[in-house]
Image (cartoon, rainbow, N blue to C red):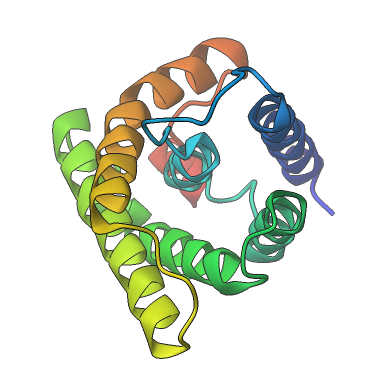
Length: 169
């Protein structure tokens, strides 16, 4: 196995563990009024678009499955959506590499919207409890707005940068 792959996977898993730990902390005494962003999804998408060679789909599935178990979400549905979304982004990474960040952000916003819409459709299809539409829209807005700070933090803290065309070959 490639050393860069191991380092990238270990860094991603560590970052996701920290995010999950922070999400599990009881930071407020009451109930949350506004849904927060899905920082893990933002990190996974940013990682796949910057270093697709360092993050395998089974690792993403496993990390999000553990998150589902610990947060008591329907097991496997959101990890499946995340794997489909990250693989769709990975397939387009070569074409998106040279574009400006604003275009990437727009594409990621559309991708996150499609993922959340598909997740909601599957919840309705299988007669699972569906959260209020207003909460889902606020969650989408928060997640989309959190993407640029997550990319900036990943670059500053972990050194996550775009793969060069030479490295891609």
